Length: 341
Image (cartoon, rainbow, N blue to C red; front, side):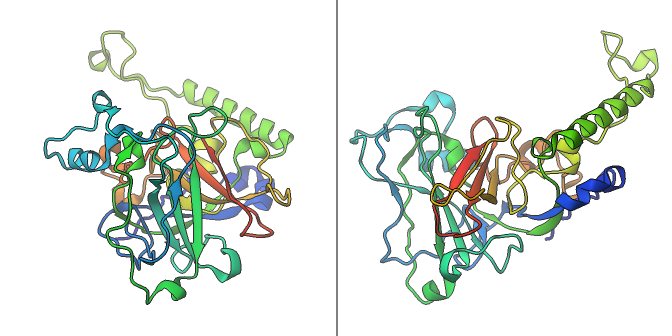
């Protein structure tokens, strides 16, 4: 089944014609529960990974035995009696802090399926995304460790595929365990995060939104007193105001290409660590497919409530944020970088 993004609430270029120079595209992946195979682009599905090839592991020092059993997480989601709630986080394995732990396979994307997926190094057409199942990395000791693997799918097509595929026995957080999802790629128009636009244009966008909000407050419709709540204000209806940041620029959800959102940290330089070139967004892995504004909710999902339908992968980054992975535009073989927003 396809997924179709509704038209934007208004044509932002009609109001700000200069945004046409920044117009881009991004491919929303629209993951939904399914049974993908190694030949499919997927989130949480089996990877096209040769059996004789070493699986990515994390050896950075951190506790790798305290958390939740991966199988318990899956059983809890099926509702068969196991629980993976916070009360169950406990010491489960006694392992050295540098013992190799298999990384979680989050997704694989074939370029044939995803129009905005950037090319890989040396003709690679298959991106495979991994993460360490513990938030124990970086300067804070609470960050995410990501691994991006590129391969030429034709070279692996005839090989024996690893089965079962390695996975950690214990994860530090149940949000690292993805549910198998098939994808429904859809290319849509996108514009930069507001803070990445020229300051003058960003200020005009802010002023425009403030003006529209004031107009909306004047148009507030009050319901009859009998329909109100105890506070006397419940039930007043204010027209929805499309906002550049939430409704007109960067869509939520898993997607490839386009622009990154910087709603948590504000923008900061993301330069290649080899050649210093400004890096470009490769992939966004998101905790949710749409947010409270629901303007990005697909037409086919219009009657579905956010829970549980807005989080089909059950992957969570940070505090229900998103993982943005960046690639060097000059050489896709240079190391990738990432940001949690």
